[in-house]
Each structure stands twice: as structure tokens, then as C-alpha cells.
Image 1: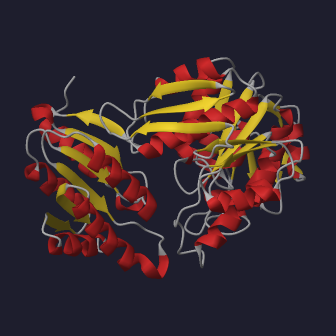
Image 2: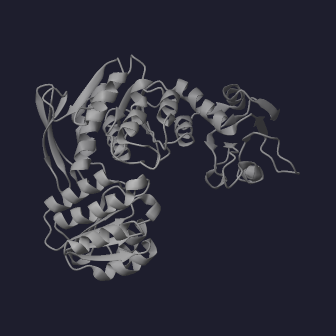
Image 3: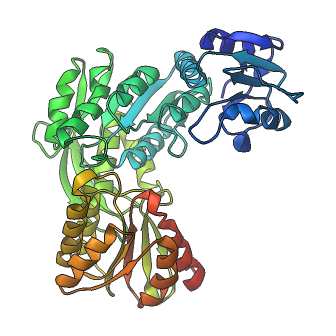
Length: 463
């Protein structure tokens, strides 16, 4: 992050300087003392389980120069060299993020959506990075705490910044979008995710569409014409737009997708009278659509498309987001363990169905969480769909996935149930055969990465 003086953070937070020299400078910001670097500002957040005020001393011992607190710490210290008192530490962090946003001179891109937003963010960052210095959200720091930290860490010399934002309820996207104040905004798609927090997919669409609603008229929206919900939501922004999809009217018109896991998906699209082709290092039609959305976002930024597509083609998937590992005996494991919902799982099954596989097609399926009252029905449908998609072996992990196992068995395929990821990690390696193509997918709360780790540990990895 750029160096910020205590006086600047004092002004941004609207707080009171309890102690220290306002001319002191901090080099980073943190909310967790375990990830705090020397010279940092520590924001003492009060959570549901832990209160950051209890860790002000730890922050000082880790080298924190400044603490932002809601109350003066008690005891004999040690304390950071400077302390700012505010009414609400989380709100103060957001205000500091907004202050940092004003310092960013390059294009700011904000991406949200029900699925694919992190992969799309990585594609956009890689594409823009072919011709500019780019800052991006690291990991999944995409909420009301993560976004301010991402804004604060943006270097002064960044020529573009790409931020991902997520939500768990209405109003959150609008709050984050106002904080980031994007020049270019994309909603990847609207799917039945987070139904635990919303009554219908229309409500999810309206919440995601808050990004378009608060977008400056001078900013550019990037619109997925294949998603009817987004065609409606995009009308909430009156400014310029770049469109993508299969429609003849799309600025970037999808012409073809090769839907496969190995060696990766590919797509062809046309833009400005020219056809472009790209082969990815990540499998699935969903990844190809993420790449198309990224290309449209890069066009909206005014960056050169040719070098961007080359960079996107070289982008490796992050762990949990479609990364492929080749094991001995020709086994291929697709690690898609970061998250899951019915539409995303259906897309993965379609890719599994279309992918050439010398051995069996195997699905290790964890519970899909946050789906509300229809959870059991969604899982039963997933088990039946797996059987229709040439899956020869299904392993369901978690109480909800048992419904998928039962449906798969009724459809006549081999299916096993595991209570949790630890149990699955013990049983799955022994169920596999040479040349199996194995897809592992579930909501991140199920922790199916344990199964991936167990397969690599027990069977090794091809160099």
C-alpha cells in the first residue's frame, strides 16, 4: 500500500488522536495480528467471537505503529506508538478505504456475480496486466472488511485496479460499490445461490443489480446479454455499456465453446468485425464464459485486446477453482472445491459429460450450502443429473449430499456417502481406478480440499 501518515488516517476516520505523533507514517493495514507487518495500522474490530481490543498489545509486539480503537486500551501495554479512537472501528475502516480510493488514478474495475467472479477477476487482472501495472483483490477479500483493505493496499503507481465484491444480503453490493466507485462494473451472472438469505432469484438479481444502480453515469457497465435477469438489472445504469453473449447484438458475440476439462476449455468470439480464439488452462464452459466476460471488461477499460487474450490464455486456475492435477496411473483430479450451487454443479456435470475420459467419470460432491428450503430437492436433482451425465461413481460428502447419493443409487450408478471431508479423504483414494477423471466440488464450508490433499499425498503427483 502507499505510505499514509497518521494525520491522513485521522482525517479519514474522523476520530480523535489518543496518543502519538500525527506525522508518523504507516505502511500497511491489518485486522488480524497474525497477518500484521511491522509499521502497520491495526484496526481493533469487535467481532461476534473475538474483540480486537484484546489484541492491541499483540499488535504492538508484532510491530504495529498505529491502533484504531473504539475505546482506549487498559493495562500497562505495550501499545502502538499512536492510537486513534473512533465510534465504530468497522465504519472507520470503510472510510479509510474510501479515502484510499480517491488516491487511485488508474481505471477501477468492480466485479460481482453468483459464480465465476474470482476467476473472472483473475482473467481481467491478467489481461490488463499485459499492458499496464495492475492491482487486484487478493484471495477473497470481497466484503465490507476485505474491500477497504484491498483499496488501502493499492500502490500509488497502479494503472488499473480490479476488485471483487460479494454479498450475503440486500444493500451490501450498493455499499461496497459506493466505496469502490468503479469506472467499469461487471455482474457475471445471477444464479440460485444465497437462497438462505433471499426469497427468490428475482431478489438475488435485484441485490446484484445494485452495482448498476449506484454506478456513475460516466462509468461503463459490462452486461451479460445471455442472462435475462442482468438484461433487466442493467437498465438501472444510464451510462455507456459493453455487452457480451450469444446475441447477434452483443459487442463481443460468442461464436463457439469447446466444453472440456482436459486440456482446458476454448472459445471463439467476434468483436469489431474480427474473430478471436482462445484456449484456456482451466476446464469447463463456465470458465470460457468467464473469459468472455473478462474480455468484454478489458474492452470497456479501453485496453488492447490482443495482448490481453494471450495473458488470459496463460492464466493458471487458483486452488479450488478448477485446478487440474495429474496423478500416477493416468488419474486426473479437478479441484473445484471453493464453492458450489445447483447451476454451477450442473455446468460442471455438463463439462464432465463432454470431456473425453479413458477411465470412469467420478464426482466427489459436497453439500451445497445457503440454498434455503429447497436444499434437499436441489441435492436430489443433482444426484439424478449426475447419473444422466455419464458419472460412473459418485461420492456424496455431508448430510445434504446423502440425498444426491440416494438419487444416484436409484438411477443405477455406484454411489457412496461420507459424513464429512475427513471421512471422504480416507475412503476416496481407495475407490479410484487408473485413468479416472475425478471432479471434486462442494461449498467451501465442507472443506473438500482435504480430499484433494489426500489424493495427492497417497497417490503422488506426476511432475
